[in-house]
Each structure stands twice: as C-alpha cells, then as structure tokens.
Image 1 (cartoon, rainbow, N blue to C red):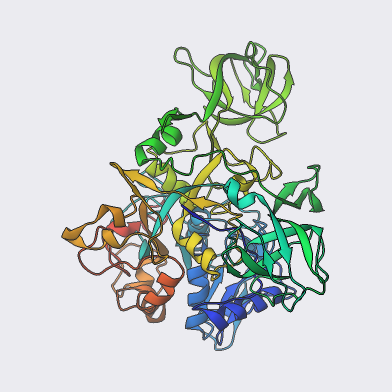
Image 2 (cartoon, one colour; image 1 turned 135 degrees about the vertical axis):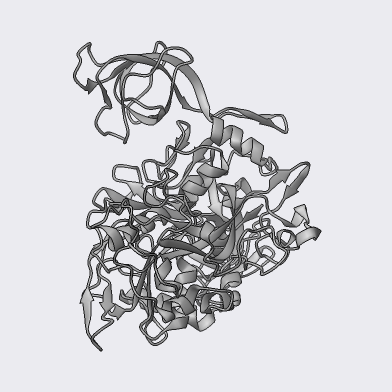
Length: 638
C-alpha cells in the first residue's frame, strides 16, 4: 500500500523542475502557454479568447497531464490540450474558447466555444460531433456542443469500442473505421482506500525558536507535502487552525511552509501542542463547516476518519468482481465485506393508472430517510414496474415504510405506467465508488468487473462524511477521505504523478493504493523504484507475476485515420480531411514524437509500450485495424 497525504501544489521540484514551475505560474494567469506556443489550457473562462493552435485536444482526465506537458514540448502553436475539468477550481462543464489556426490563410484563425468535455467518452463524443455532426455523429449533449472543425484529438483511457458495443454505431469497432485509437503508454488501475488511522492521528509536537522552526512529533512520519494544522501553544510565526505544508521531513522531525515546496517558516518562539493531518474537499451548501459557497458548492477543511477497510485485505480480482460485478459479499482474512445492507422486499405502484406517474414504494420495516442512497434490484420472481431499471437511487418523500425513488438526490421521482416489485437495500460496510459518467476509467472498470453499466450497489455521489452529496470525479480521493468505508478505482500512473509533484493539482486527499492478490501473491501497485509495477509484464517468455500488476490497460489518443495515415480513403467515403504529416509525425509509429518521449511518459507515472516481447497487444503509435472504430451512423464513413 502506498499512502501520502494530499498536496495542493504551489511550487515544483524533481525531474520536470522549471517546466513544472512554469505550468503552475501560467495556470494562475488563465490561458496556460508552454514553450513557444504549445499549450495546456487551464482556464475555463479566460478574460479573452484563447490563442490559436493547429490541433485542439480534449477528453481523458487520466492522460491529460502527459498531453499537457507534451504540448509544451512540441511548442510552435501546434497543440492545445484542455483538461477534463477546470484544474484550478475542479469545476466540470465550464465553457472553453479554443482558437483554431487557419490551414489556408497564414496568420488567420477562428474561435470556437463549447463546454469542456469531462472524460474519455465525452471527449470521443465531442470529437465525433466536431467531425460528423451532419452525418450521424454522436451528440455529446454538452451545454454547448463543439462546432465543426473545433477538435482534432481526444484523449482516451478506455479501449477502442468502449464508447459503443453495438455494431454499426459511432464508436463501435470497425476495421475500416475512420477514427483510430493510437496507443502511447500503459496504465494500471487498483482499488484505493482512504487514509489510515495512523495518517490522520493527532501527534504531540514541540518546536524550536529558530529559522526555520524545527518540529518534532514522535510517531508522525509525515511525507513531504503533507497538509497539517497546529493547535495548543503555537510557535510565533505560525497560526492555529491554518493549513501548513510539511517540508524537509526526516523521521518524526520536519519544517512547515505556507505553500507546497515553499520556504520553511521561522519560529520566533518555541511551541508545543498537537499537529494533525487535514484536507480540503468540495462540500454541499448546508454541510456544517462548508464555506466559500458558490452555486450551492463550497469547500470544507477536515481531518478524515481513518479508513475502516483493512490495509492487508489485498482483494483479488475475483473478490473485486464479487463486490463490484455481483454486489455480493466476500470474506477475506475472517472479515466479511458487504456492499449492501439489509435487503427489503418492496412493491411499487403508480396509483393504478396506465399513464406514467410517480412510483410509490412500500417496504415493510425499511424506515429509509430522505437523501439516503439505496440499491434497487430486480426481484427473484416477478418484475420491476415497466420502464424502471435496477440501479442506484436516492430516497425522496419517505414516510415510515413508504418512499419514492429518484435518480438524483432531491430530484424528481421515477415514473412508470404500471406496478411491480423489487428488492431495496441501503449501504453495507463497504461503499463501492466509481467515477463520473463519461470517464474512461469507469468504462474500463465496468469491463474489468464483467458488467456493461453502473450497478445498483455503486456510488457516483459521496454518501458519507463532510463531502457527502459531491459527485465522484476520476482519480480524486475526496470520497475515500470523506467516507471511511469507501473504496474506488484509481489510476496508478496518475497517483504516481501526483505523488512526485509533477501533476497538479494533487487531489488524492491521502488515499492509499492497495495490492491485488494473484493466487497467493499480493502484487503491489508500485515497485521499489517508485514506478508502476509492470516490469514483469514486459519480459515476454520471462513473465514475472509479482512484478506485473494484474489490472492494466493501454491508453490512447483518438483521431481521424486518414488524417494521420498517408493512404487514399476508399471510394464513396465522405468529407475526409487531407493527410497531415505534422499530426502524423506527432503520434503515429514507434518513432513518432510522442513515442520517443519515453522519459516524459515514464516520469508522469505511465509505462512505456515495448516494441517486442510484451504482454500488451500493441506497440506505441500503432494504427492497426483492431484499433479503428466507426465515426458516424451512415454507410459512408467520413
């Protein structure tokens, strides 16, 4: 397991050094520009329209940082990479305004304006709409959809075919399809818990009157970047109930700074008291301690309750499939984990009419309360009311044993044209979190768990603790810090990048990556070199399980096949863009610019795709027919 308290980055260190500092400083300005003119665009609503670039990139949260840095390396006004959410506020869905450089008139450009796509699926659908809105492309359903010609690349952490499994529809596998998923790296995914009791415990400290002040807190062992607060006799130069960042830790001694990697603060007097780990997450207005509220969402600083999930459980893939795939209980090391609580037989009626009306449910002995999230299962005999699906719902209009169900907290009741029965259950002693719809990690986790949709016992909204009611975002540990019974899938690469300080912001909130057992061997997510534990996957016939984490995936960039492969499109296809040697040179083949940036890829936590003897299907930069998907819903692709 690999814990580290959360970090809000204000400075940088390590291999990226000055580039990282440049990233942060320009992010604050708004439209972030690297190198000469490559860009990783941070601002959702800049004061003026963003500068013009040749190719705009959106989509996956998992790989956004690789593409952000890559855009800076490329420079020259070529790539603009927009993150999945606003990287400063973490707000999703805000409007972005990319400028697109003209391909025909030197110095000319046109401006686009659309809602920021959040995740791999949303990125693909937006790309598809930009290319094929007139010929049956997927409508991404954003508040503002992208116009034609506004996007060239979408980032994806889900595999080809992940958007659609229905042949003949956009996003479905098609060996002659107009879109191609071009792999460039390996990621692995494990389940994580919240911070441990030892991490969040309060420790007694003493500090020196010196420059800088030296703090000693026996048993603490804080990592660099840990966010803590002081209480008691606080030394001069410091304030109680204020977030400080640990710097220069050594055993149980450390200094404190006002910013991450900042200058250690001097103590003008000695001090003694308590030091404790705190973190800051989003919160729903009305939550005790929730401040800085805008549009019903604010922030809250709290010290989490240590996770209730054993740090030596080391669930196997089969265990995870039982939990996530079947919503069934498992027993590991004599501990039973059940994702659902007491189950109640329920009957639902719409009042007896034949027109759609709210379904009122009755479940004797249930006593559910408004706002509680429950799992609705189909009955073993009989059926759910017409048009009602099994899934996670929220209780509304509860009264003793009767209630209605809503797809969202406090939302409208689900309706039906008839009556039926089902089984309803509240949470158990392990809460199964998954990220937002549209996330590539959600699609990947569904596939890994052997299902094709979110299951009734899954949670996409935090159900316990100070952050209750907040939507779960990909690779964000807020749910696990807030809910001590929570677990959720986390990208190991993304975690490593945040741990090293090369990915901002750090949104782990103290989450702990867990080993996954294969046979009788717990396989660790990170090896002794602090890299993703996949070297054993890359050795062909010399495969080593203990060095090959069992849940891995390739990650991709998606673009038009004929724009990056110099071949004539088949007769009858429509509106194919011309081959672009610059775009192709950036992404296609093992000698492409991105594939040759192996140092960038590995130092942001990912594994490099090998060229031979690998457990992975593809080489970096491949455009094989197995990686192609359909662009639109017409017979003629293009």
